[in-house]
Amino acid sequence: MFGLLHFKKRISVGLMTLLMAGSVAGCGASSAEQTGTADNTPKDSNSQTVSNYEVKEQLPNILVDQVGYNTESEKIAIFRGENLPEEFQVKDLETGEVVYTGQIDRSSLNEEVGEYNAVGRFNDFKEPGQYYIYADIVGESYSFSIAEDVYQDVFNEACKEFYINRCGMSLSEGYAGENAHTACHTQMAILQDDPSVQIEVNGGWHMDEQADRDTYIGSRIAENLLTAYEMNPSSFTDETGIPESGNGIPDILDEVRYEVEWLLKMQDSRTGGIYGAAMTDTSKSGDVFTAPVYVTGVSTESTISFSAMAARFSFFYQKYDPDFATTCLKAADRAYSCFLNNQKPEDNTGAFNASAQLYRATGNQNYLNVLNMYFAKSDFAALFEEDNNVFSGAITYLSTNQPVDMDQCGVIMKLLMKRSESISAKASNNGYKVTDSGSTADFSALLADMKCLTITDHIIYNHEYTTIIENHAHFLMGMNSNAINYVTEETENSYASKNGAAGIMNDPQNDALFIFMLSVLQQQKS
Image 1 (cartoon, rainbow, N blue to C red):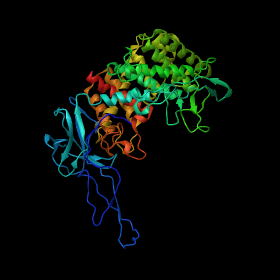
Image 2: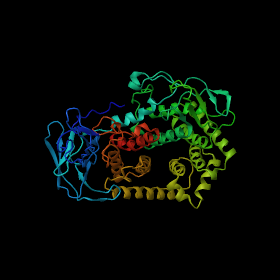
Image 3: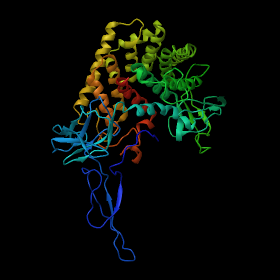
Image 4: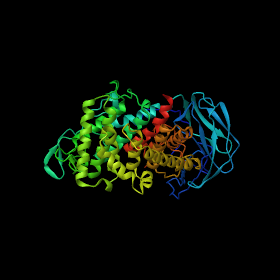
């Protein structure tokens, strides 16, 4: 899927079936578990017995970020085993020459994954190149690189995934490569509630393999991208390789605008509500790009989520296109009014987030009243901890130029620091230096934790937080118990070669949060 990084392959991985006589000899990483199982098979016509031996997947006991490490960053590898040697070596990938020798910490039990883990650090080795790690007893790691800006290509590719998933326009090979295609879903859609009504709703981002487009999910993704831009604007360039590149506007804002233009089409002209989704009906056509589309009815959740996102977008887009920004702000206000006609603000936390965005954009007292109503709730602290709408709205309240209650800002800052310190402690006490290292770790939860740390790191820079964020990047790109790179395809052991394993960038919601996380690391390079 991606042509990002081309590492020399050293370790053979995957399920292998060997035709052998006698014992099974190991291959690949010397630390890998070697397991053989014999099947009883019939003899052939020459009375020769053919035995099939299935060798369990070979995984190293030295785990690294298979994409690599920045030259100036902290660099760690995870070692598995209760009895480990004292030293490890970093070796040049091409020559096998030892270029660095480091110490391995004492191992301790990681109960989440049921194994002993230890850390080896090589922070002061900064020579760019491609390497692997070796240690007696445990063997070799997969290969990795060290570079001045090792994540730049990954970051750009993650951002460009949204262009690849654009609906309603032709994608040329020059921009989309093998994902190029002619314009899709350009026909009029029908309204599910009234098939006699036709709506023009081409545009936006495909959300899944069925090419469906969801307004609630789209709004939440766009808001995460906008918040990432707000936290770390210098990380986002105007040269990621999309048609709008070079227009003087950060490409991430161009991409969000593409989604916003579609969302505006999904706003009911009569009520201001937002239709829920544009669904591809493949029952009459096997080709998802040419299949007819139907639009689901107005959704309360989509309406209030759109209101929050459109208000946030208008705030940042004023400097680039005031007219379009104003159009978005008016649409946000209409959606907010539609929501209030159907639901009380205290009954849906989406109203808190939308009120925060609209208050920052307009200074209107009515929006502040809703914020103050939530601040007075006895369970506000719990909502801040558990509810994304309250968390996002509260962070926006901290950053507004409108009049605010400084005591309330102090309360929010204490809650933010408490949540961040909890995340930090959990990661520090984990063998893999992340908040959840289980073999079935919830990537969405991990990335949400890093969103919180990224925001805190923006408000009050903390080197420890930056290191934790980077360790989560390492975890997702190979430093995990499965030794799988869940982000890119072309490293020694990536998700692409695993049946059922999902890539982070293949889920638009996780991709947006991954961009959020990496933006703080790219900010360090700016």
